Length: 356
Image 1: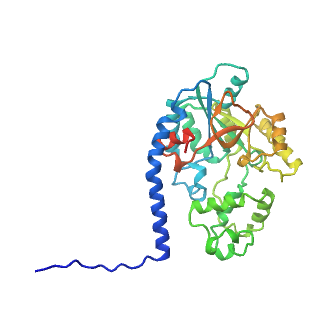
Image 2 (image 1 turned 180 degrees about the vertical axis):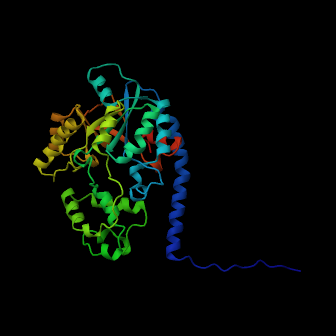
Image 3 (image 1 turned 30 degrees about the vertical axis):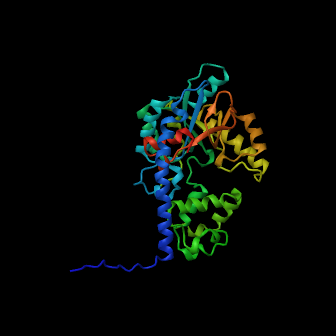
């Protein structure tokens, strides 16, 4: 008896499934390539090698939130590290670096005192409430110092940053969203973003507009903000004082209102953002504020000139490692840390290398 192979009919793949399959393949290929690249960077990067001169790594964190927290789902992926990951990272840093207070390292550098060959400073931007709820207890457990750059006029208020306002706005009916001329071009097929990555895409595209324009647009949509925050976005003054008084947290300025220091910012507003934030933080915390952080990493010539007159140093969002010989205290490089790219020792150390 002869048997013949059974012929299976093959249906043509739909355009949507073909696109999905192509994307899945590309992501899989990237993962296959990325893993050995991460392994090499983690094992052989600058954080593992000796240096002829002192070097300073400055890590940039924003939010520390567990996935179970409702705020997690409404935030951009690049803004979050989970508490368990944060603790793991601090333990890794203890083995790789001398962990320093940023201000003390800068003072030692200025006075030509001896510096550790590989130092690392931890920084947080904005003053999020979750820094107090989740990060601060871990800093105390691990006895590690950090610098927190606070937006002075938002501390102790219910104000929200515009990306978070946008995130809440996008929870509304798509038909209502399509009525907004300024938002419509960023809604694919008339639908709100389906995931946090899509939200990040829209936020990055809207960053091209000045802060006052973004504020006006969001103010005009206030009637659609039906989902209210259950907690303030940022900590209050009592919580910030507790962190500063602990001896583990140095507070720096992140402007009054987180206005980006671009050339389209009026000079009188720029002056207030730089000088008044310092005054308010010093008055509330009863200590000198000598460090500054550029909102979104933006700076113009006028801002840089004024900052050098008011502060001792400033950090950017520019990725890099600060070396003792090539050193600009007003444009210090940092390494942004977030969950997706740093949630294992291999990923975290490859990020520390700055190679990936």
